[in-house]
Image 1: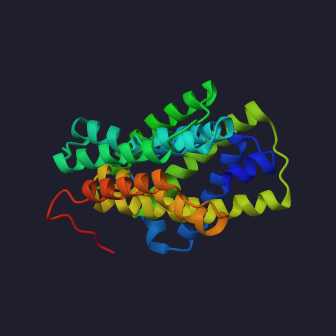
Image 2 (image 1 turned 135 degrees about the vertical axis):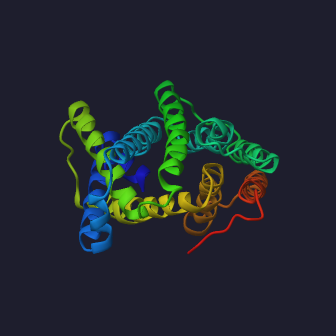
Length: 276
């Protein structure tokens, strides 16, 4: 859908991302306003926690997502996906110092296997561009930093995932819109483009990011980042079912490697449990 918006509807990447996240923020504001418990918890957020949430939004929504849109606009999506597949490895490497959550040998092996699977899956001419590569690398670092910051904010479970999402996303959306309008100007959005943006805002942003913050209450940053990389498998299967893009032998090998890597990375301890 992002590719349709960029290529078919000729949307500019930063304003496209900004409008998407702004609509998602407004949707979540309405949801929080209609939930007395969530609304009440906003008033109990201390100054330091406000700062952490705003910084999370600037890094994980504005920088990471804005960079990804620029990367997708500048080079094939597969190229950007390959670079972003390094996220679990970065998170595993730095979470010990940033969070005090030392990854196990199994988790590190799983992260390495995810990267190997992604390389196999995306083998061939990937069409790197200078702008796309820089943007994807910025997105990679911001994505990894956002995963660790999100874990730090969520692991004490002091706030509901919806509250964390609405505050952080509102800050990120505001920054994206300001930068996008300053660089790209006012967007011209067709009816079809609005349908794409609304779907992305509600399903792929408001709902998905709330679930992401929920996962970070229960799982370590490495575990969540590894599971997030199953998008490689999901996209391959969806392309097979809906676009008649039958996966080749290397694609299947890559999917299996990513699947095994995720399985290893998300089973670090016997005591880990997920509460629904």
